[in-house]
Image 1 (cartoon, one colour):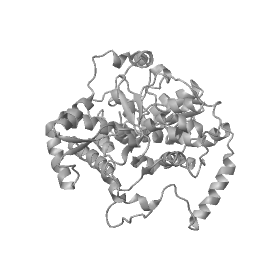
Image 2 (tube, helix red, strand yellow):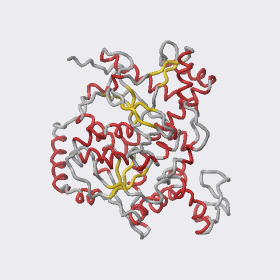
Image 3 (cartoon, rainbow, N blue to C red):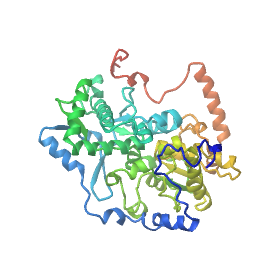
Image 4 (cartoon, rainbow, N blue to C red):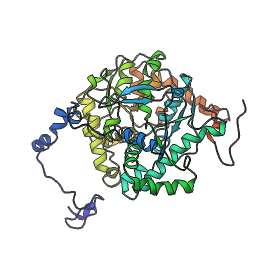
Length: 451
């Protein structure tokens, strides 16, 4: 190393610590070291042949029976659909009366992500609450910097899910009326992990109870724990028959690759949906299920298991690693090996990384391009959502025009419609997917909506 890279002698300043050393593997040795991914990981035996993994819900029911916690249940009013997880356990996926736990990264970087989901729910005539009284899960801080701690993560988790539980009271409806639906894969994995820690540790429950008591976020003096932690992609998977009924765009000529998110299915893997009708049950079912249901071709590729490159710490301290990994281990393989027309994902950081870093290939003289979008964006597009007003493809850095052309959608005409709509917005005649008066459910800004 030289001073040209900001280093002093041979010392490396990466933000990872001195334990990160160059392995100096040859190309052949590096392939051998990672060959297990392609050979074994798509067989569930790596997980299912182990001793039975504990279902933390068993602990949850006992703690509630002992009077230590209250469980927020998925009830019949939430119209749950049952799906099997990795070990064949049942998981209830609520499909109605949902409380949207928004994603900071989606709202800031990919706004068409949440608008596509709300648009789908409007099309399906479902009841939901999209309020402002929530916070970030703070897991990016925890995983990216190490500054956060488990106690703070647990307090944020319980605070947000308590708000979901009591949110309907502002409308004169009972507690538990809405059930939280988590938009972000990072939040999803973090909350499931934290729920496990809470259920296992009486000390953590005691410490966090004191915090929640100060916030007025206890139920009968007890912590409120959700029966299920549910990701929006699980909702999309559960609703794919109803979404398919509303499809108006033919996508049978599309070759789609799937990027499954680490925080969705590698963290607490026993809680994630696997479906024998999707890839023979060998891989996580979300995203692939809706793509296949809508008629697109789900194409396999050798690096499907790889992280997108985001990695939290990587994006902060080794950004060029993130960029090169995203392009050469994911995008380039999907294009050259799978001949993909689009890559579909289900997590904020993954979509952002894979979509917005493709310029690095061009900058280094080895360009590669592939449209990248979330499964709910893809589903809404197939159901006729406007590619700019709803899907908001203009926020994407990857070449969405090629995808629209392959689908037979006149993107130039749609763009002209969108530009005309922006003039209407400028004149004060904008449209909303959701009554903005319902966004505030507490505090001085709240106004009850009559009727």
